Image (cartoon, rainbow, N blue to C red; front, top):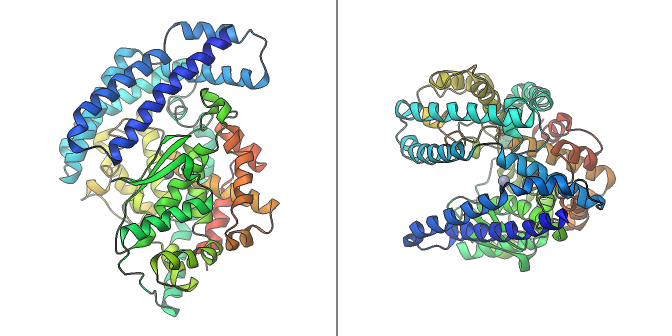
Length: 494
Ligand SMILES: [Zn+2]
């Protein structure tokens, strides 16, 4: 039976993915510096094995044969995901993948060095090479998948997402934010004039912050027998669903930054820990995609973790671990602080989408050949001035050089961040609609109802549906900017 062969293949691939995920998480957290070279060799060898096994020519035949077999509904869905996965993995020739991998690694290393020196002139030719390769890649993917070139790139990250669906939603959000950002900043200034912001400065030992983080993780549903918390330079959620590795980094003078990071990664972890375990070795049992994943992390960090009711419950927990007590009016100005800035990763939830929409617009033009890398600094600067009133023309390090994504050839990824934020707002609205008591539940620290809702509607679904279909089934309607806009108005408006 061909389905049986796919099922066995799934187990083999899962084992290799497991090893790679744990080695990768370990590299960023516990590996001795001297272990780097051999670790890279080991991981490259395993990644090669994984790729060869996942793209073996006979798999296409197994899939075609399995499609003719008598299968259960879930098995049929599993075969469809095997096909989608196989197609996305095999649509580029091996020679191209090798060339692309080499250029990406070279440009990423160059980016690290040149960004620190703010040296656009030396970076430009390397990025040009990447953009040329990405245009080739998009054309090849487009041929096989029968999608527009930019859609074919997005398909890797969020199956089913199309520019034709996203652009109107982003256009509505952008139009709203251009007026709303100055209004929200004025409102913040007025609030702070009435009640001056009390600094949260103090000395918060790392071990106490870690205990606080673990307590919060457990409270919001993280299963500590299937995951752990470590320290890394860049926070991430890695590992495997049965052993999820999340990380944070600590600043001893500010406990909020690590805590918010922990909540964000816990959101990713909850999704992984609650995926359907009986399908763990099928592509069908994996998380749907980057936007849905980000919707789960932002759900915990923004929809729950920055909700004033959450803080009614959380403040005593913070006091217990750090020994200082703040009032809700002390803490909220920090949790809801907004400002215009150059850097996407430092942006708050009000200004963040503008950083993403700017990149979404520019990368479509780059992929489509309507914009060349040489003209990127000017194009970036024009959009930055238009959206946020800031100029980056003399400072490319904080302009088109600030993210590693493009240097690494990841085009079509940026929209996932803001789609995730919008999806999280829409999910909370749907949950609140069914549970009018939602805010009181948060104030009591009762996260089970909201987790049960996400378990049923998102987590247990694995990859049954495309990204847009999953959202529609979970919330009763297609992605709609209104929910995120209402959320921002309510939290940051007058
Ligand atoms: Zn995230």
